[in-house]
Structure formats: C-alpha cells, structure tokens
Length: 100
Image 1 (cartoon, helix red, strand yellow):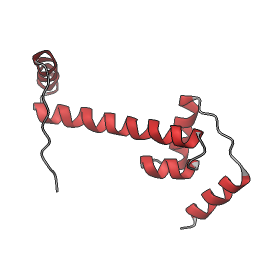
Image 2 (spheres, rainbow, N blue to C red; image 1 turned 30 degrees about the horizontal axis):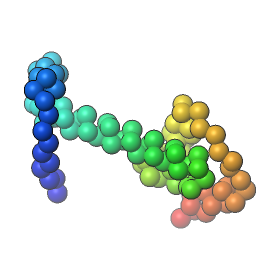
Image 3 (tube, helix red, strand yellow; image 1 turned 90 degrees about the vertical axis):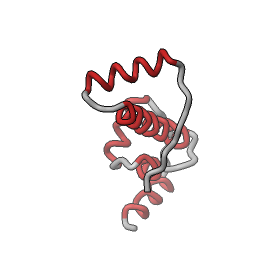
Image 4 (cartoon, rainbow, N blue to C red; image 1 turned 30 degrees about the vertical axis):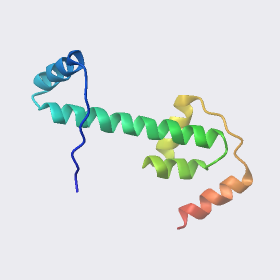
C-alpha cells in the first residue's frame, strides 16, 4: 500500500520541479516520485558497492540488494572502479546462492 510522505523545500526548488513537471506533462508528485526512486536506487547501489569492496558481502549479495542481475552488478562494479579480493569462498557462496 502506498503511503504519503511530505517534506519542505525552498521555493526555488519547487519552481524548478514545477518547470520540469510542465515540460514533461506530469504533475509535481510524479516528478518527485521519479527523483526519489532514482536517488534511492543510486544510494542502494553505492552502499552495496561499498559493502562489496569492504568484503562484507559477495557480488551476488550486492546484486540481490540492488535488485540487479549479476551481470548488471558487474557493470556497476566496473563503472565505479571497485576492487575487491574475491576469493574461492566467495565464489562458493555465490554459487550456493544461485542454486537457492
């Protein structure tokens, strides 16, 4: 079930949001929802990449947290230039997760 969330913004930001909404032919709520969902996705990916790089989670776990395929997550890792010490135990854990 959807819930209503409110926040306060300066008039200058509301004006910009309204301009975008008018250009796109949608209402203010649609623009804000789009902004929020995009930012939420980016934040989730960034946090998952940090956890992956720190060795807290496997690549497969990061992909699942981000609701991405493993290949999409690999692309995110490449794009962010993330380096990790991926070990045999990590591979085993990923393969086990794939079979679940």
